[in-house]
Amino acid sequence: MKKRITAFVLSLFLLSIISSGSYSYPKFAALYGEKCSNCHVNPTGGGMRKPGAMKFARKTLFFRFLKQANASTNIETQISQGISVGGDMRMLFVDNQVGENLPHFNSFFQMQGDLYLNAEVNDYISVMIAPGLYIPGNNIPNNPLATKYEIYGLISGIPAGIYLKVGRFIPNFGIKLPEHRAYNRQFNDFYTPYASDAGFELGISPDFGNGSLTLTAGVSNGSSTNAAGQTNNNFDFDTQRQFTGSLDFRWQGKKRKWGLGLGGSFINNPFKYDPANGTDAIRKVAAGYVAGGFMERVAIMGEWTYNRLDIANATSTRFDQRTLFGEIDIRIIDGLDLKGQYELYDNLANEILNRRRYSFGVDMFPLTGLEIESIVRLVKEPNGSDI
Image (cartoon, rainbow, N blue to C red; front, top):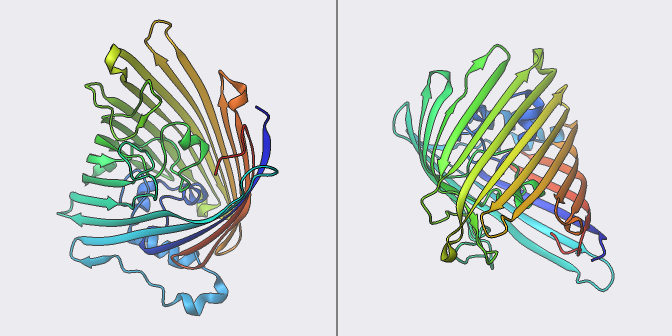
């Protein structure tokens, strides 16, 4: 099938109702060489922010000429002793002009609606509940885009940053992006932020000098795609378990003149591919990333992911694919960033399925808690249908 160039005009409107600020913004960690747990209640990032992160947002994420208006945007997340609430709402307007003889898509779309409730039982134990909305038209069983919700208990506050998370949560894999259809998530069974899983995760995150290390290991039910091509991103209904491991290094220069991050993640997920015929399969996904920040003005991130699926059928079928993701953010003034992205999906068995996507735009925070993002996307793909 002939490939086409497709132009997308995307305007993202995000209102952070009480707390957080979308699912996760790894560009901030890249800018300052910070680890995710410095800003988020979740040790691996995403979701509800800590009070220190809210102070950072009030200090940095707004237009200076609206300073007087921003003085009234204080967001208080704690509603009683030990109990905090937060939330995210993101609405998307899409104008998708795909060219001659193809449909023109123009619509508003509710991308995210999450509520966070964190209860601190004591200095070491807390419970996080994070339900999300059902995406219209996707509220069917086993659909990975149907909803996102997390509920887990967390033991933390132990020396060296040791923690234990138990419950339903998003496995700690790769760079956590707010766009759930980024190629390095969409084509690797991680429809961030919607795909979740259940199990436990153990982590350690010591600080040393101007740097930090974070090592996590988790065991969960896993996800699967059966012989009919149906995906179950909740769990795979068998006795085999998924292992997820991640390693992350962060360094911070003096006076925050620069920051550097390096890391990698790995998944080993055995599952029943065709239970009726006793056919097993195993999916292995490896990812490596690099991130850098300069003068608190420029953030650069990149991630490479390799995905292999081995099916133990009569022909020992194997599928290999890889994805690449790159992003640069340039702060023009406080509250205004220029943004560029490059994405690649490479189906190593069938070149005609390959895709490339280039994104350019601006990211604005007029007031703390309010984000407006406008992006133009050029997509090279098989059918010009992706949004």
